[in-house]
Length: 249
Ligand SMILES: Nc1ncnc2c1ncn2[C@@H]1O[C@H](COP(=O)(O)OP(=O)(O)OP(=O)(O)O)[C@@H](O)[C@H]1O
Image (tube, rainbow, N blue to C red; front, top):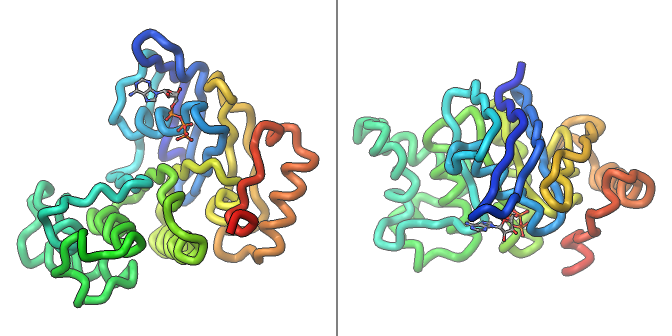
């Protein structure tokens, strides 16, 4: 069953075409990674899919109940504590004070934030903790679909892996679906069921490849071999550069 269906999407900024002829579908329980070189329109596509941007033409069909978004920048309210940031969306959803406290505590636990961190303000938290608060804020609304837009790019290697594992486990346990934007094929191979490639100039999805097995159950060697083969032999990934963070570190 398709939970996100994108058909013939076209978008332009100030008359300059950014996306054209985009068709994409995400199935229930599937994490679809969208890769493509910098500036090809990945974020724009995620914004259109999530309804933050109105496309010039085309249709977006959302069959999920509730979505959440996790961006590279945690974008926390500086004047609110970690707990208040996590519960922010719940106030608008008119969740009672008591349920809010329960859901904040539960989401904080899911991302391994200590109870002692919850009264702290963003300025008192490390970069990784801030990103964990942002993930907890997304989980607190109990979404069945999550948009990820390069959420871990700014984190160091070890933390990035922990956050990836957290996302894999959370999505698998709750049967969530998602669209995961990344320019890193290694990250895509780790986190997703299927990888789609956006054209360098945003003109169509060039194709997609199903990954073997399930995220979280592949070994590091399997992921590495899949990426190496894709980059060496699969013309679909011709324009994708090898940005394995382990090589940079
Ligand atoms: N608000 C905006 N106004 C005008 N142009 C924009 C705007 N946002 C993005 N663009 C342009 O649209 C193109 C696609 O940008 P987008 O951020 O979607 O690409 P991306 O693939 O996500 O890039 P990256 O991987 O570097 O984040 C780029 O040329 C960018 O400069």
